[in-house]
Length: 459
Ligand code: GAP
Image 1 (cartoon, rainbow, N blue to C red):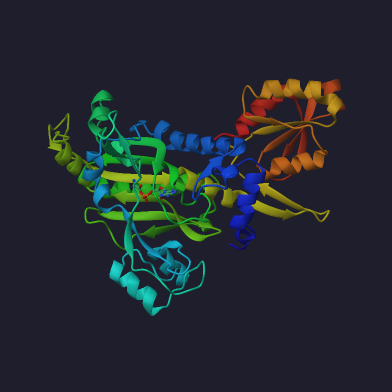
Image 2: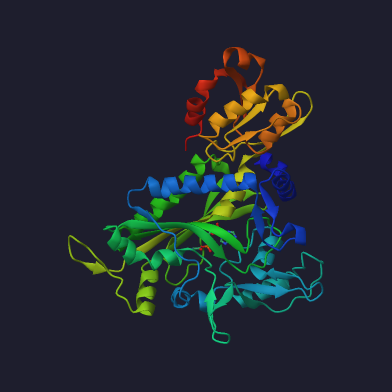
């Protein structure tokens, strides 16, 4: 684990800003708490992560169907899901400095992760904080308000006539868009249970825990997949998805040591099993994704609240039933953070310099290749090579500064290949290709570049 300690959240935030990965939201106005904007490099990384997820869980899964449901949904959806009644965090205000904190986070931070607040009642949390004299992390005082439940759903209103506005909510998860489309997808695609509905999209939560970069934000993207199955096969599918979601992370380059399962101690009344995969980050061990056995709760509730019969009819046996759901949910932005922390490295070079390098899986790397003319008077040839490569891959082009500095810049954004154009290129049509991880260099013909790089960036 030692090498991970080289990275602090401050270092990562600064690198991300300096290198065009992630900027503070509304930066020129002093920012807006818990919002972040992806820059030109970051948006490529995030898109590549979404592509890899979709490929693995939709494209390569013959029983999976994608949707892109509306963010604003009929408010009854949130009554059925239980969000309007109980989607809230236990919060406390420090009376001295007026900062607001989540009581469960205070307890877990105070106990250095040894005391989980997951299964605690409000009273138990208050008792723990009082008995252990848990102080305000901001001002150091012990001067708390009682715990209050803080609603996490953002409300907005729709209505064309002034005064006749209806409350609608920005969805706090994408999952409900998958549940409400269960029958639409099943019928239009002639899908047979077991099958899955997947979607990637924005979700919004009025979170009150600032200061952890993109780990917990008020606006974020989720990648969620609901498996609809018979009760008899549900536990096997739950176990399968635990393994598949971990394998996905291992295939993206995560080390086994930096991932672990965390089975939930306390289950929702309808849930039959639940676990997270946690990753090792500069914040410690944190949740990356969840796998939940939700029984037939979701379809049962939507059937009840919508008044529509949502039963699946087995085409062979004619059996009618509401399927169980095994949910797999991962925050895209949280996966971006995990990928960044996993990829980050600082290497001591022989000349005494430190090389910061992002060892992204090549399929995730924002730019696959950078074209670098050794001197500016080689730029015509270099631009020709760039024009060829950018038809196939996202490429960067850089002719400013020494070649060493240009390599360093590409290392910091994790570009797996740099192609250098020199005077021999004009003579024999060959270039130098330099590998990010080993810094080894080899000579290739220009026409070999596309097949060579294509083979190395597959996921
Ligand atoms: N539909 C199930 C669901 O939404 P969740 O555990 O609340 O479950 C799933 O969220 C995942 O979404 C989390 O594991 C995390 O990766 C991500 N996530 C949740 N809240 C987030 C936030 N405020 N900011 C960033 N990612 C978040």
